[in-house]
Amino acid sequence: MKKTIVIIIAVVALLTALSPKLLGFSVFHLGHALQVATSMSAKLACSSVYVSGLDKQTAFSDLSSYSPATKLVKLDYSETHLVNASLLGLSYAEAKYREGLGCSLVLTNEIGEAVKLDDISVPNISKSTLAWPLGETVETIDTSMQLVLDNIVKNDNKWGFITRAMLVVKNGKIVAEAYGNDITSDTKLLGWSMTKSVTAILIARMQQLKLVSENPNQLFPQWSDKRGDIRLQQMLNMASGLEFDETYAPGTDATHMLFTAYSASDVAITSPIATFLILLALPIY
Image (cartoon, rainbow, N blue to C red):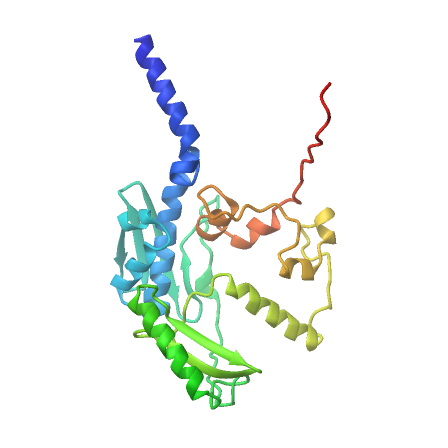
């Protein structure tokens, strides 16, 4: 009996020690890993089908590029633009599409309140016929560059890289744009970290119009401590000094912010200033 207990303890200890290398995350974060898998599947499938207009099989295939675990997720689409995801009956998630807002996870806070996104009114933005970048008209295509780009996108998709859109800007003008199968210039695609660049551009334009200060600090009322010294430019440069684990493994700040947090912005707002431990190498006598 003692021998069996020792073996069990040894196996558990070994799995605990090896899980970060074998799974990419600690075994203690297994529950969070399951929830991330379902939440990510629900959100991305919802965006793929209802925002990008891709078919459901393509949406499911895309998910496997993020994690093999998503192949086990079952997706159900409703007529009310809801996507339900379940993983072997162990975890569940739901995402909803709203016109003008896109898709978001259906989450509740600690007292069971859901975010009231249905109350948000989104103005209708009509297309502009002005020349790009002020509008959507493009009359500056370079035929030789266009041929090169067409071949790149065609070969990328032939080799399985699933390239959906490529655009070349030279001297402030669009000289070539190419798209994959069933994708057009009007197709909305996931921006991920490119959204940070767009945000920086928008803020720069607001500064130009004198709508915001040049480089303010005291950015949030919650930052009444040392974080109040953080300036806007540091935030835009991702050099705020806030403690944030962006390895995208289950149990980290990034996956919590994206797929399990009731308020994504609160994850950053409540993050403390990072502290660093400096170890000095002292001679041993």
